[in-house]
Length: 464
Image 1 (tube, rainbow, N blue to C red):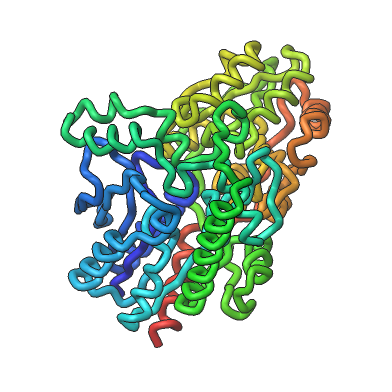
Image 2: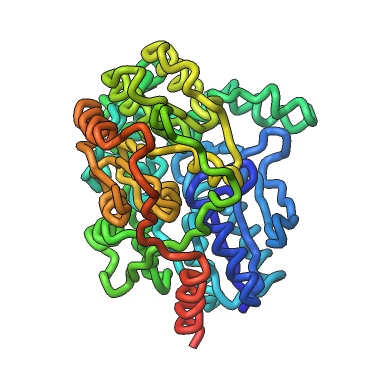
């Protein structure tokens, strides 16, 4: 089979869960004899808008299109005709038997419609809520609270806090991004990192950065409501064009059934993983050492690191050591706030890491905390920790509930509640003694090999 797989961005620059899962699945499918081609977007101010690059990553072919987010209006943030044309050219050249959409953000929402016009079967894996939430699929209000509404007026009021999400990029920034490609290698270093973060993520923890559009202007607000309604209408068209949705968790399946997708069209399928190779590293001597509590992930507000830091500030420093792994340059405003509010943990930040190092990192931890404040779907890091027997404490939200219950020593805490998280950490520490909490107990997980076979079976059924 020839499989075209779409994703919003990819390795090595972007190493979040969806990207890593897509890479592992593509590699597994290639091992079993399938021909895989990846199509993804990348923000790169050193290259001109919509430039197409072709290459190979670890044996997997790809087509990368540059999207520097130069949208003039809201519709261009999700419906991109230029990228649609690039997609058509790929279909002409590659002639896939099937299209598997891992994500469409940064590309164009109408790609499944184009596939249907070509009579090519297509599948969509629901990694987050981008299809129904234009706020980067996070379903978070500007103040950081979870949003349960799908009303266009509610979405419009939320989006008014994020001008860049509706094509309202400041003129000076937009002109700067157009000039940067002509600076060559200097472009990456001269690009405004804060601008990159604001394009990709909301900044609800920095009130000074909330630039509200004049929603009190009835005409302007109604135009924005109409624009959101137009996006919702396209979502319904796309859903009819997708042959099958895959839901990594029962939670996200229920959310999209509630949004209007027929339940028989959403198949629950737990993602597979490649278990981290902790055996490659010497077992750490835990005797007389403090237990090590870890956070591994993207350092952005919705991942909830501030909740963990607040909880750890309630734990005597001689009881445990905190280790934080993530890139501090992704969201400078957030990092500045954390450094200001929690100076005692300045030495706890260990910087960015490659996913190839995840086994080594986990091998040095005794407890993993996943304190996300948004409705996580199926966090890869919980599955990886479970596979190697690392206890997990996670927010009682979304798909984290399902995954944490598979962890032999997993616990859940009230979302965004630092006091409850501190209580759960104390319970873990009470079980700790001079020789450690006992042998690791790996929990239940699906291997990428087994998962790949299930995916291939689904492909075959669609093609038959």
